[in-house]
Image (cartoon, rainbow, N blue to C red):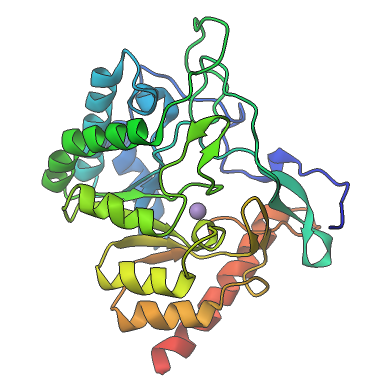
Length: 322
Ligand SMILES: [Mn+2]
């Protein structure tokens, strides 16, 4: 395997907060007014706001960690979901993960030496106390030491409790809870269990809480990185069940723990085949690029996203005319 030397400048990704990967204010939940303002600012540009992606770890970390603030954090989630509903935003994306997105490497993996994300083997470093969802500090007063390893059954129990506490509120609010699969999808990361690290585990989530509000943030990249299953069968099965709320439309080569994120036209996934399955099953939600390799120019992240969006804009009419 060729080793590359360049490192990704994290500032290339404007979606992050100025403070980097830090949680927000634990006492300041997103208000309906703020969310309405956000939606209206997007509509003023002739666009529609379809989803908010992820709770802030500051607002719900003890739901994931089964910590002492769990009940208050369920209430935070209910409040945020109600506020989304009031603001007319129909989808809340989330990733039910203790360790979060972690353990990837950033190097010039993609075509033309474009900076991209990959994996060079599993990350075994334990999670220090006070950390949740790969955010450095959710509890500044945490004692020294590491977060004890949970089991898969404990993690599923936490999800079951969460869905039991939240789903009826989401139904009333007209908001779908859209679960992202694990990124990267290994059974454990940093000594913590992962939830959806094989395609069939998504079915377990659906069956755990039958509800129109229990839906998927369907990440093609993470699903293709999984060691079992077939990406087209996954798209077929879950889109036929009408469980896709929106799709992360991206491409990869390889599988965990050794894979590379590629340009949309350059990986293992046959994009048009995926689009044809979605069309057959009447998927009418949003496709977004999620993330892409970054091009060498003054706006690396934006150029990569523009390339993916251009590809998608060209592909959709081809599929629609068939
Ligand atoms: Mn994704």
